[in-house]
Image 1: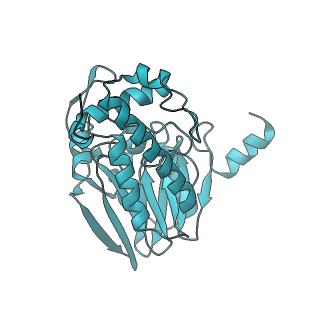
Image 2: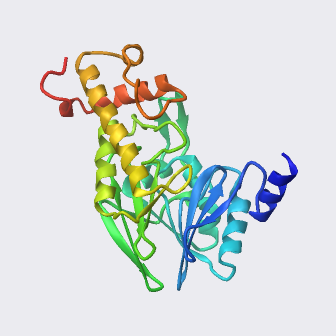
Image 3: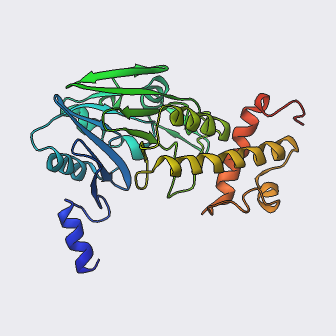
Amino acid sequence: MNRRDLLKGAAALCVPGLLRAQTKLSDKLAVIDGGGANVTAFLTGEGLVVVDSGAPGSGNAVLAALKSFAPNAKVSTLFNTHYHLDQTANNEAFAAQGAKIISQKRTREWLSRDYWDPSVEKYVKARAKGAWPVETFVNKGTLKTGGEEIDYGYLLMAHTSGDAYVHFKSVNVIAVGDLASPVRDPELDWFTGGWVGGRVDSMDLVLGISNDQTKFIPAYGPAMTKAEFKAERDMMEEVRQRIYDRVRGGEGPQDMLEGGALDGLPRKWKDPMKFLYSAAKGGWGYHDKLGSNVV
């Protein structure tokens, strides 16, 4: 780390490698780097509303950054956009300070039960009870707190089986979790139900509640404009159409890769085989949506 990086990190209350920046999108809303993953903090008249709690090992840095952003405010509510550890690792720390954790119903189920993860071929133990959401929703809801109105809703099979968005209406910002992936390969948690079709449909849902000035906060990377979010949606729609044709024809991920399923797109995949494997598994999981000529 050079001197410039060191000073930049210190100014952002940074633990090297854990918390690189705190970006304010308005006087009320900041995006904190929680171990690489985004933690969104919104200041209301009754405390902070936070989206996602950060990755393992980032807890102290995240809490320090929140204190810097709003020195006199406690976290009243924590939303989880989905169950993955890099978005929920610090749930217990927030709950211990009195925050109410809210998630889509299926996210709580994944956090509160043992399950078999076929992607790593092992059982994953349920999280400690302090990490579990205490309030869940099925479709959508509204939180009214401190003079603010915050909408939230289900993103059906977009990335996992329990994804959610959180819409901070007064500042025109939507936290979308791993629905958008501007700096990493898009991921599909196929064994819980995530698939390309669900991702595109959910992106359309979020676009439908936005306007041209809306900012979108992904799980990783900088805030996105509507044009940037729409461009990723259009790319995923192109992928969906290509995957449909190939799954109908009985192709596997290697066939898809060699056949150019990801060629000519406006981005390059770091691990195209992993993505195509997940896309193919998800496609077969929703074979009834692929058309009448499924082989």
